[in-house]
Amino acid sequence: MANCDFLLAQEISNFCDKPLAKGATSEAVIINRNDIDFDATTTAADGSVTSLVLKSGKKGYRCLQPGNKPYGTGNTTLAVGDYNNTWTHTLPIILLAHDADVTTNIIEVLGKGEFVVVVKMKNTGDTTTANGRYQIYGFDNGMRASEQTHTIADDALGSGWSTTLQEEGAMKPARFLVGTTAEATEQAYEALVQA
Image: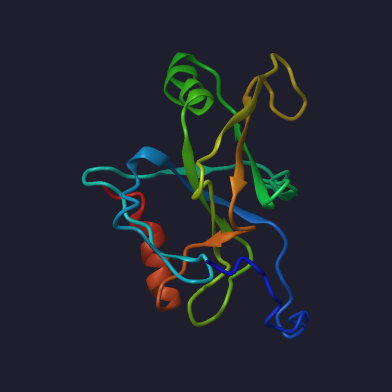
């Protein structure tokens, strides 16, 4: 029988020598979850994704967000269950465009599809491996639209779109893309947008 106890094994302290940068950069990569080869993808014991492999001929797409607080209302919350606690990840996607191509090729797909999103954080992460730099949302159960709004004349969006993607039941509070070196981690992130 497996031991399901979760026992603290590390001091709880802040890293005062390297303050945590707040927020995300404007850059992320969004991937159709079905395009990920989960059999070839590898994770470490801490839940970090050490190799995020896409199926042959598939690629992710850059997701550049406008404004001073890209992904600003994104958050992670604890979901308390009867027998197991999980986490809910929420990430907003803003698109300041509105035409037939946008609504068919992006908005409708975001509204109906399932995704994994790798967000480039402002925090540069561990200097050796960049652990903490590239946060992965939707790895466990995929992210799906929980809300989608188009307002004809909005002070913030103009007549653009706001889509909220959400993953429920995540087994980890956070997952990160982590290579053997900081350079390898950056290369792994950039490789996601190449078919």
